[in-house]
Length: 105
Image (cartoon, rainbow, N blue to C red; front, side, top):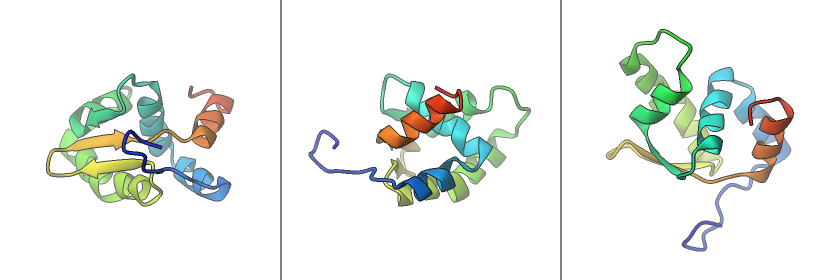
């Protein structure tokens, strides 16, 4: 439940595996899991989740905006304010556990 009392991420096991099936999504979720703040600007998320890759930031921003963030939003894991380029993350205990088991936590 978030501060407003609104329940968000209620991913079932199949949804968690779909979300974590992509290496880039696993990395960006791990970035959220490791942040003290549940909100990140998109630019910071891109920088922190692509540290070991040579990447065109604009291409990655488009990829996140059109592929990964909508998928996370559809499952209630994030709220993405595209106007402000700000993402709010809602923790999911099952995702935290799976990331820990695969060594990304």
